[in-house]
Amino acid sequence: MSSISSFQRLFGLHEDFKQTPLNLSPKTFQAFTLFQNKAKDQGIDLYVASGFRSFSRQASIWNAKAKGERDLIDDYGEKLDFNELSPTQVLFSILRWSALPGFSRHHWGSDFDVIDQKALAQNPDYKVELIPSEYEAKGIFENLGAFLSREISESPFFRPYEIDRGGVAIEPWHLSYAPEANLLSDELTYEKAKDFIMSAHYQEILLKETVLEHFDEIYERFIRPL
Ligand SMILES: [Zn+2]
Image (cartoon, rainbow, N blue to C red; front, side):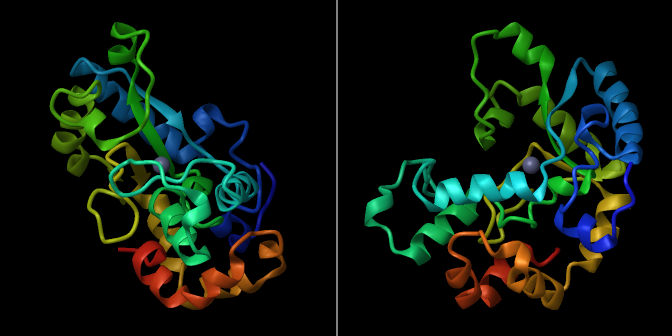
């Protein structure tokens, strides 16, 4: 693993967890395997659908949405008409479902999205969407959702997007390894976040001016740690 600065780690300016098992940090991976065993005992094949995602990956998702090349979805899952939206409306509709580049937590190596491989094996044609209803009663990952609600408080993991704070839509599948993630989220102050957006790293990020115009609100609703 390369030696990266805490700044690079905080904002995902590295590719360190691209080659690690399940794209997790070594400590998170270790804790995950224990949690995976617990899930197995309860009939769930816990699997990481998505782990590490670098700043540059987050940036390309962001820019594709900001250009209207990727669908924008409203709060109810309906597709929005890109051409009818103002830059501010585009910005906030992206933020509902995708993080501002450098703020997704997926670059920390401590955060990842989980699915139940067993449920998928039983429904081989099913296309996973990662929507809350999949983790609720009658959803394909109902058992996993119930397992997480039951066991997560006894584990070193937590769900940072468990409730809707008027910001990011709820993500019952997104787990965070507290011992590592909390160290990083403690560093994520208002000043550091704003400095990063004003730095050269944000040169290519679309809607940057609109982000800065609404930065206080964005920090409060989408960035500030709980
Ligand atoms: Zn996630």
